[in-house]
Image 1 (cartoon, rainbow, N blue to C red):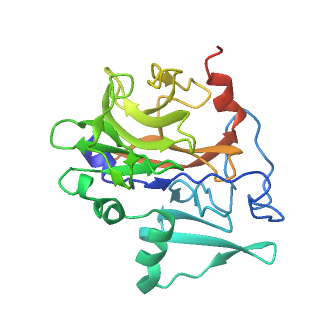
Image 2 (cartoon, helix red, strand yellow):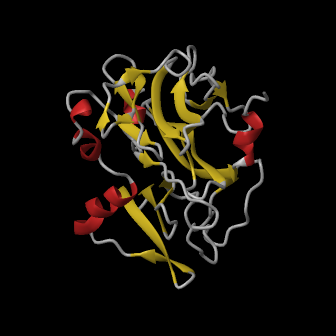
Image 3 (cartoon, rainbow, N blue to C red):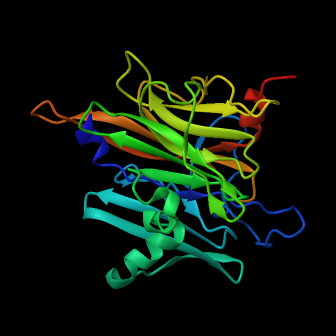
Length: 279
């Protein structure tokens, strides 16, 4: 299992909230693609998602004028960063020099060093994080040497300083390989992926915040999203309209070892609202 995860990329996501009136206007924010309903669709086939290669999940800049993904396989002997830019109301591929790749990756996925500059996190093992609009960090740790067991924690910004991190409840910390959280900008829900007991591939889960501030029982997002393969890296676009995730299939090599290939998918945000418990 550890070998499979070494092929992946841990995504660090910042949640940004815009009002309907101040969101930057673009002719089309989604590469002129037909917009999905509540059934997931492959994102931008032939442009981003391909059959020949393996693409990681799509990440937009907060103003949605650029997006990035990583492609590997075939002629791409190592993971290669792709950036697309909307300029003058037209999408085009942006050339990234190898010397600039680290800088561009950090624009889309801020490094752990950004989080570690705060005293509260300096001595804590962290694999990845997400942060809400008001600055609350939700982060996780995976122990790859102990069958993927780990946990998720959070820390609020209080009077200009981050509190001592608090380990989340069993509502979230159940299973192993608990990873890739996405916190809603208003912290009304949290999504992540994990492997539950008896399973050897991850599914995506969601928990909604209760009236008393606690987190509700984890909800498996169902077979519309989750399959016997890999589903990971849930996130919502900065304009709050679409839910993106990554779906992969397990393949076997001649020596019996496994690897995973996959592509990004997207679905209307109404899918999440349909899961929200009715009061």
